[in-house]
View 1 (cartoon, helix red, strand yellow):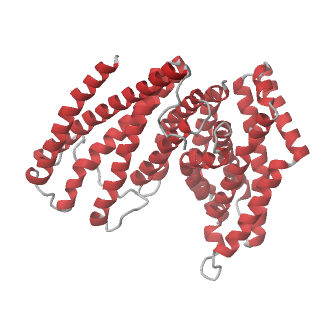
View 2: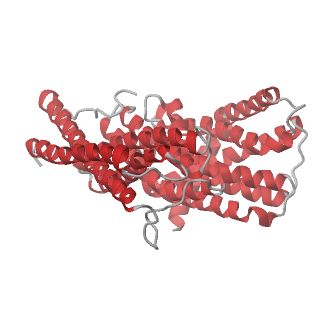
View 3: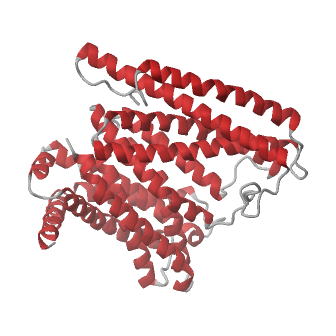
Length: 225
Length: 238
């Protein structure tokens, strides 16, 4: 068990170090997220729509789109420099490799989310009530998105239309998760009591567990040569 | 099974299947009584419901064959999975086309974000993705494994998709035939529905058998000519 966790730690550390040095994905995802927020500002007529009524949905769309951008690149770097081969030949188990990649993706997406919430808060003058539970909801939802995104990202990188196929595969599976993420975020932002989103939080947890478990089991069939 | 055997099985399934489809048409247009509240448009139900049943069965077969393929690595399981997936997408398309035709009259709208509509649409997208994915890799072996992974993910996600979209109030007609108290509908309606179920199930297996034989032929031909495994026909170069 300790050896397994150690393997996970090595992958997480490696991915985050590379990202910290190159800033390749975080720059693309963050820049994209801010630009989407600007586009959304001009796409809705603020004299008709109150921003806080639609903010939760728009925030999650922005997160999801930037997530796809980042997950699509998660394995591209490994493939370009033939590192994937090396990791697969090393004693690191496939499950640990997947979990490590997922945690790194999770960290990356969480950083982007912090940016998205800040930018939306500033652009649309939103206030976030119920912050503690809002963070719980966002973190659990992000675990599910990262779990599925990492597995499908590993698939997409080996296909010819790699960048365009990822959302096609991921969105149908993610839409139900987004339903709960948006409901929970919206209600908590509006200052509703946390008890009202208990069901949504449980469903988000169910998605996270399902995607992480399926990813851990199925990942070895994806990277197999 | 040999190819001639497959072809014979296909014919044996297709003939009664087509005969039952003809019988179904007669029943739907001339025999079954018109439903009181919904009127004539309700007759589309005898095509809609059997298609949905066949589609769900097909995706069950895809998932079972995909899991077995990843486990055992037998090519025949993958061929069965892709054959079932194409049939499943076909029948889901029929569900998605007949549904709005009915809904326009019964609900006054072509489309509504009702739970069963939404989950069927998502299901359609998942398995269209399955077919796309098979043709999208340079190595056919890899495409098959990727598709199998997606086939399994799809079926695992279905209960959660359904639970999630049911969060919103459902306005779909509730079950009138399969109820613990026994069918509520007129016996002739039940018989017509059962004809539809039998006809579409037989047709599906006929289509699946032919598709399986085609996949076998494609693989055998290219192995014979080039000595390398053939790319799958499905999703051809998407």
